[in-house]
Every structure is written in structure tokens, then in C-alpha cells.
Image (cartoon, rainbow, N blue to C red; front, side):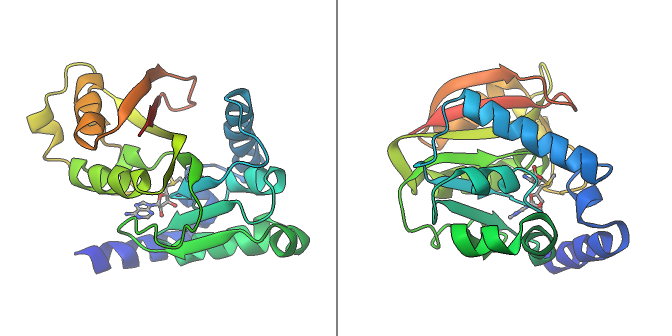
Length: 217
Ligand SMILES: C[S@@+](CC[C@H](N)C(=O)[O-])C[C@H]1O[C@@H](n2cnc3c(N)ncnc32)[C@H](O)[C@@H]1O
């Protein structure tokens, strides 16, 4: 089943391109959205010396601005689709930036963060958990948690639906091409069950109405 999905996603990327796969209509919008994420993180006091983990980094929509801004060797990106990371490295970042900043990447679909060799100050999952089941969300958050610096923050976006019961949400299966919904309360429970503390769970002006969750160890 997992292999089928991998193949299906590969075909979609080949057919529609990396930009459409991650949810932008064109390169201009891809850049604008990435810049909005970056501006939000700067507003949240992201600093060049911070270590940044971008889970579901895709084609580096956000990564392009973060990598430029951070000190060398401080960006770590993870995605299940190698085609997207290749797109980011070849078409989004300049060769000079790749050479100078030395971003590190891992391709896997089980949120294995072993490649991250420094405590993470900011972990970022943009439009990732909005497509993950509860089981996958927990695996993702727990693996990230193991890599966080003492005072680090985890940010993730998700689709919130008032009153949606956990039993119903529990039946949803991960799929990058489907929007999965969770109530605010269910997401609070999931975060707590992962041993993380809530900082914020609410609206953030996302273009498709996703909510932002901020939590820490
Ligand atoms: C909607 S895209 C967002 C990409 C990026 N965060 C951005 O804002 O441009 C979701 C990304 O999550 C990745 N993804 C989905 N499930 C994953 C999994 N199980 N492991 C790793 N990456 C996954 C997809 O390949 C895709 O790149």
C-alpha cells in the first residue's frame, strides 16, 4: 500500500510538477507563500544561529528563505519524495547557496530524524500534519521531540474542524492529496499524548484556513 502511494505521488509530481504537488499554482505563488512562512518565523524570533528542522520540506518553498538566512550547517530537511528535494536543490536554491550553507536532507517516510546531528531550536511542519493520520502524526511529533533543544519550538499546521469526534478522525488515512481534519480538542490530546506542551493552537491567516499549533518539550 505504502509503495503504491509513493508511486502515485511520483507520477503526480512528474505530471503536474513539484510546485503544484506542494499546493502552489505557480512559481510566483510558491515564492510568495514561502516568504510568508519565513516572515512569520522571523516575527517569532527565528535567528541565524538557530538549528531548523523542516519536516515535509517538499521543494523548499519555505526552505529557500530559511537556508539563505541561517548560518551554515543549520538547516535539516526531511521528505518522503526525493523528486521534491531535487527540485529544491536544482531549481529553487542557487548552487552557491547549496555549497555555502550546506543544508542536510533525508528522504524517508517514517519521520526518521537520525540525520539531525544538533539540538533543534525550531521544527517546522507546514501543510504536513494536515495530511497525516493520528498514528503518523504521533510518530512524527515523537521523533521530532527527540531532537529538540531544551527550549525549542515545534510549529505545525493542520485543518481544524469544530466538534469532530476523535473516533471519526481516527478513521482517516494519511494521504498527501487529501485534507484531514481534527478538532482543536483532539489535537490538544494528541500533542499531550506525545509528551509535548501546548503554546498555541489557533488561527494564523493561512490561505487555506489551516490552524497553527506551537508546542515544546
Ligand atoms: C503540502 S506539501 C508541503 C511541503 C512544504 N512543507 C511546503 O510548505 O512547501 C506536504 C509535504 O509533506 C511530504 N510528506 C507527506 N507525508 C510524508 C511522510 N510520511 N514522510 C515525509 N514527508 C511526507 C510530502 O511529500 C510533501 O512534500
